[in-house]
Length: 338
Ligand code: PEP
Ligand code: MN
Image (cartoon, rainbow, N blue to C red):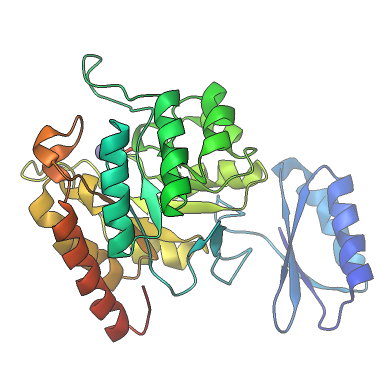
């Protein structure tokens, strides 16, 4: 339910309404607009009738039900775009944020080389998987905690904040100790116990869309993280399964404007997994920005032919640097910056 307060409602009245909402076992989500303050009352639907009584308060103008099944993720509760701030970087709010690096952290030499290259090309965050979700149990599974330590070392040397994937609820604590942003991979988009756990990790979360997840299901997954108390969620379109097989997945760029309409959360595009082939990464990265994404996550490797995972879709550093130059020009045309 959204409670719209009368223009001029003061802090004491806002606090009073919040206290009453919380006394019903619901969460109060205050959104102060230029004209009016609205308060979202989020939680168990069974309390709706008791909530209705708040309409009698003098400071309340009206009460409107939240129509979407996702509440905190919805534009109905928050009209303005969320900007997720990460130590030294921000995703959302006009500037385009680029996360780049290898699919997997493989060694210190590999990570340092790629980190320096993406930093000098202008990337804002370093990506790299330490715990890898692999289709085959015989494929490289990641350096695990050693990979996290190498990421922390790369952050120290380059100053770039780092994003890495967490696969299991009981690893959220250790990943959050090292990472600036926790990635939830496509395969875990509907792993609800993991989503609840990262809702309490205190670090921003990049949530990837599942390969067979509808946009509404995707937003409900984000809702789990938000409802857990973590407001810093970045959504990532990374391609869905279709009948098409020439590309690894079908990058669903429709999702970008659709999500922008439905939600205030920032959206980034992953053209690496979305296409599966390095030749298609630059065109789809540019398309992602053109259709309104707040940023990109791109795989870069200095020797893709030797990569332990996702080499065929990894850009070499010179190609990544060229793409960044093109994106800068595109951003200017769009009245944005990178
Ligand atoms: C990755 O980012 O390397 C990854 C495994 O992504 P996804 O979950 O989108 O497949
Ligand atoms: Mn990958």
